[in-house]
Length: 124
Image 1: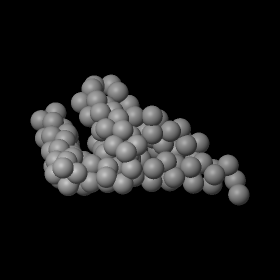
Image 2 (image 1 turned 90 degrees about the vertical axis):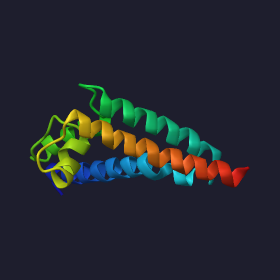
Image 3 (image 1 turned 30 degrees about the horizontal axis):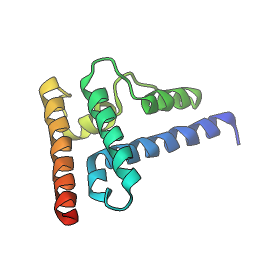
Image 4 (image 1 turned 60 degrees about the vertical axis):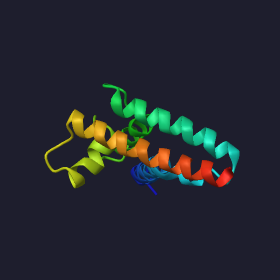
């Protein structure tokens, strides 16, 4: 196994972890009833994701890792964030405007408010 193969594997693994993180941010509120610590981790992840998505120039460390491993694997790297790179071309063919970005963040927040509200009603 060559170094390029190892870096390719690490790039793919980082992409999977990045996708899992995004899914956790979007849907994690529905799983907070399992363990109390999940709520803390989820809220921290949600705050980080909203901050990173709405703050110009903030790049997620997972994106940096993907680029590092991808570069050493001989793949092309990118400067935009993960969502802009992988999801926006699929969902929005024309690119991500700041208004669309705010709407996406609003949708994620709404999903989580609903999840926490459901959990709150189940608890009390």
